[in-house]
Image 1 (cartoon, rainbow, N blue to C red):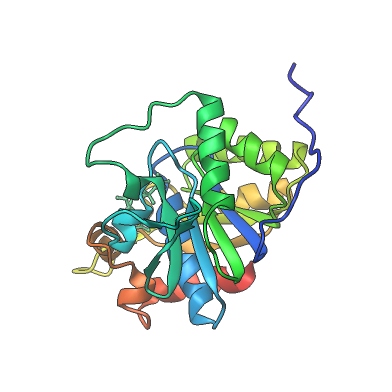
Image 2 (image 1 turned 30 degrees about the vertical axis):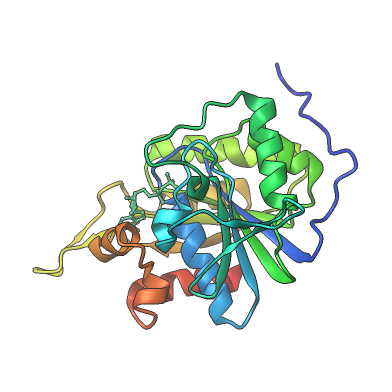
Length: 259
Ligand code: ADP
């Protein structure tokens, strides 16, 4: 059942934004937001004007990942001025909540909140806007893909079967809604023990590359499980900004070049 996926009707572009790339995942905790932030930074390093919209309204993590503090300024006409962090223009509902405050919104509120963040932010001319989607396939995704021309979506998964099964569902949704799939990233692909140099395939390995092959979508590359990625993220110092020449940053740069 359920083959009647919502069809696009009157999709429009966002004023002043040339290209929109969304980053999604089948389930939470696979590293979608971390990947979105670091891909955005890698694109900015290429000389592009890049924005980052946190569409994960129920679990916004962009402010923490970019070390953003305080609320965004609001112009007299109600338009948000995005925060600037590491050369990115970023907007997140997380910056508008008091610490610990939950967003308790039904679908229609969430979709109008998303619309406001997307359309009522002064992006000021962007080459690319990266959208950090919520995990899964819910109201926010449907509203975004129905109303807005999204040029492509990157799906992040771990190599684990459980994550890949859900990633496949996210890709199914994109296909049914006629949104281009840019490819699959395998995050937490492997772990190299810093003391012994031993490689551990904690969540299995190669699963995403195989799944990408089966689904006939590009495999965009692996990102290893590295303590510094987690530490840098918690500290508001994403690897691409903090250690731009490091191997982690290189992994994100490679992916950014493929999209
Ligand atoms: P999601 O957006 O899918 O919920 P997050 O980006 O918030 O996932 O990542 C979940 C957790 O995993 C965070 O603590 C993050 O710092 C950590 N993490 C993500 N990718 C990596 C990685 N490659 N290596 C180490 N830790 C990672």
